[in-house]
Image (cartoon, rainbow, N blue to C red; front, side, top):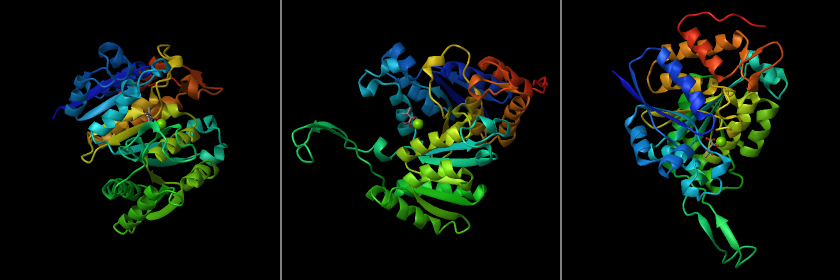
Length: 366
Ligand code: IPM
Ligand code: MG
C-alpha cells in the first residue's frame, strides 16, 4: 500500500531542514508518494493566505504531514488571521490533531551541550504530551473591547477564554496513560487547579481516567512547581501530560535540558494516529538559507512518522540508529558543536544520515 505524505516546508530554515528529511525518507525506499505545498509566510507571499485551501486539502488527503517551520518577524504587523502561525494552528484544529507528543531525550554525546550539570541530564528521556486543540489557544470568546468593569472601567481591554470540556480531557488522558504504560509507567499531570476552574476539572478527570490504568503511577503537579522540578531533577519525570498553553511552555523548557532544541522531533496525532510531524523548534529566520541549521529534529520527526502513522517500526529504528551513528562519528551543526567534534552544515548532516541508512560508513572524526 502506497502512503501519501504531504510535505510543507514553510518559512525560514524550514525548506533546508525538510529537504534533508525528505532525502532520508527517500533513502528508505518505501512505497510513498510525496507532494509538496506552500504554508506560512511563503504561502502568504504566493497566494495571500498562510494556509491556502489547496494546502489544507492536501494535508487532509494525506496519511501524514511533514512540516518544517513557519514565521518571520516581517509578518508581525499583519492582522492575526494572516500571520504564518495561523497555518499551524489551523492545521491542528482542522485535522483534529489533539495529541502532541514531544520527547525530550538527552543523547549521550550531547550531555555537555545542556545548560544543566551533565549528571542531571545524562540519560534523560521524558515524553511531554500536550493537548493541542483546546485551552486558551482556541477558547471563545476572545477579542478586544471597552471594559465595563474591572480595575479600569472604560479602558481598552483584551481577553481570551481558557476552557476544556470533559471529553477533551478524557481523550488526552487516555493517550498519556497508554504512553506511560509502554514506558516506565509514571505519569505526571500538570495543572493549576489551585487557581483555575479549567484545571480543577482537568485534575478531576485525569484522576477518574486513572481508574482504568491502575498499573500506571499518577502524580498531579502545579505548573509552577513542574517548571521548577524540570530544572531541579528532570530525570524524576517519565511522561508529563498537560494543557495546550502549559505544554507550549514546559516543552520548550524540557527541550533546552537536552542541549539543543535542534534535536527534538514532535508528533501531533488525531484519534486514528494520522499525524503531523515537525521539529520542536521554530523557523530561525536569522540563519535561514545559510545551510547552518540542524536538520536532525526534522529527520527524527520522520522516524516518529514511520513509527506512529506508517506503522514501520523497523524503518523508524533505522533512522534513529543512523542519527546516533552520525553523532558518534563526531559530526555536529553549530547549535550542538563542542570542542573535539567537527562542525558541519545542514547538507553534510543529511548526507551522513543517508549514508548511514544506505549502509555506507562514516569516517570517525575527533
Ligand atoms: C509550538 C509553537 C506554536 C505554539 C506557535 C508557532 C503558534 O510555539 O508549536 O510550540 O504556540 O503552539
Ligand atoms: Mg512553542
